[in-house]
Length: 257
Image (cartoon, rainbow, N blue to C red; front, side):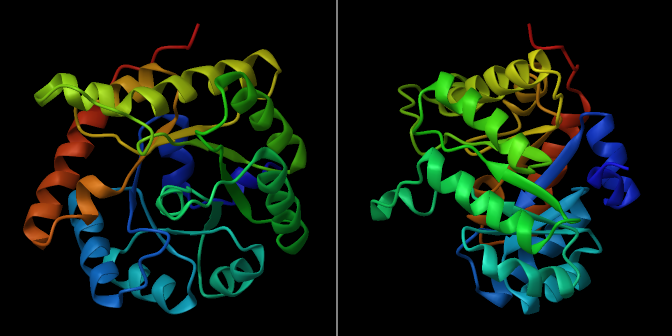
């Protein structure tokens, strides 16, 4: 049995249909009131999973507020077991967007080491690992393959912090998403070619405009953070999540060539 079969049924179905929508509260967001608002909005808006910082109290809070399965994110493997014991359905290494402004960069060797330690600690828990966007695309592809060999079940892409959009409106949104879309296409193709067609989640810099592009690029789902969590009004968050759900529902899956 694949570890992915241990996920809640709704997550398995969303991945299989390539329609998974993850709302990201933020790896460094330990503000309980903020996480509660984002979680309620994610549940009311139709998300499939909420991604919170790796803290047992936040896991319980988010689950109660959203009614959704919980993913916890961290870069310290030792934090994961307590969050899983609190009810997290899966764990994720990364993404790393919060660290880049601090000058903290994760290379392939470190990500692999974190992955191996996480798998040692949690041999049966579903593990998603983010591939750093600072690597050239060919190195991202190779790292994704190495991560699968190290025990990753899902590969996530990123890239929003490296994007340099020059345009306003729709064109600017597409420019913002270009790095993570390119990574999703390259990695999903590399995994398929290697006979390891694991789910790829496309995250960082996405919007309702670009969610369908992520699916067309080969992703099985998307992760959206700042488009939701930067809003101060909960009703506005719900509206955005619903818009994301509608955009993702209209996406037409295309096998990455």
